[in-house]
Image (cartoon, rainbow, N blue to C red):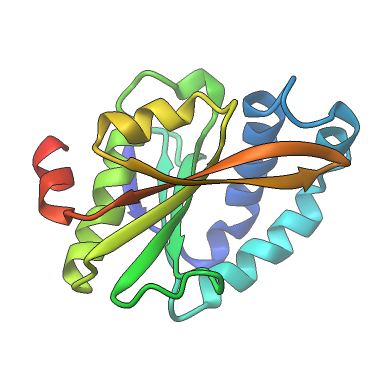
Length: 173
């Protein structure tokens, strides 16, 4: 497995992982109709824009055949008004590659970037029913807020976690 910084040429592969991961991760959480209607084309367009953003950092995981099997993304959300901070906006890995340490490695790459940029606080938003929250908690994320959001017509609880010591997270990775 190889981890590297994403390029525009990776947008389609990232979009495929994004859509496929949402369909497995959020099955039974987000309405099936919403998940079914996710579009590879629209997600590819989104990822082209995301990768082009100067304030965005995207890394991918590839299998030995060079296929994208996971990715991680970070940038400062418009709703984040905390000085000297950023957001971990996504980590997704195809289900068949779970349990191989890829999430840990992708998280490490993001936190190395956060340290390089001198950030003091990192936030991540995760649905309450998404088991990934325990992964973040394992690496020291502390719950700081819970809000309600609507996806596909369903009201969901979204948890906002915070890390306030980049070095402590990196020491665990």
